[in-house]
Length: 316
Ligand code: TRP
Image (cartoon, rainbow, N blue to C red; front, side):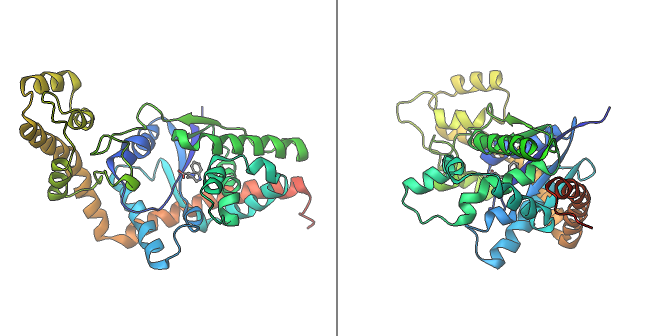
């Protein structure tokens, strides 16, 4: 029996933090044991907020190195770059012609932007159509995403159903796979770890950076167990053992933080070393992405041929 297939996308948005790792990246590495899959670096999706070619290039390479360093195996997972497979934007256009404005106006991302009175670019408005194309081109069984992306996967499902209704059975309707148990990793201030809160611990932090981040964790002054330290610590240490240690060292914030630094270093150091290795040969890493994109292109082209047949534009 052939393996089930997943598709997911990641924005090339700079340095990942441990919240990104537990919230999404790690899942892909785990899924590769049982699934075959496609992980798409969605550079065209990022374009509406990242309009600096130097930064765009650097970020694409950076996210590629990140995924190789955490152990994504290109033999099992196809790593591709969205802009290298033009079928994504081509199919997005077709989807746009069968989708109404009021329907897309219900998308959270659009409503949020509108509520902030932002002048919304058409790309942001159509974002879910390109994402639907990313997904549906590869006929996946599941789409692993964070809870915030659930609606986008539902839009992709609706779009598949709509196309199938109008033009006949063409697209497989995928299931969302919400990575909710691990989605919320607390930051150094106790709120959700997020770049916008400035409370992150970088996934590939140096020892010095780890130290700085941990020392900045906000501790409550009421004595006892520093809950923000504990909330992060339990991701890296057996919880039963950790509970005991925290009880024994009640009030000794500095010692507990030092222990967290060592646990973080133990966890991060191997990945950091691997990333450094990949960084030494960027052309080789890029070759992996290029090869992945070529593999994906074959599948996407095949699907597009079927789509063109269905809509009747293939006259020769
Ligand atoms: N919208 C997703 C995010 O911001 C990224 C994404 C783009 C994606 N295309 C996708 C996720 C396809 C899953 C499947 O996180």
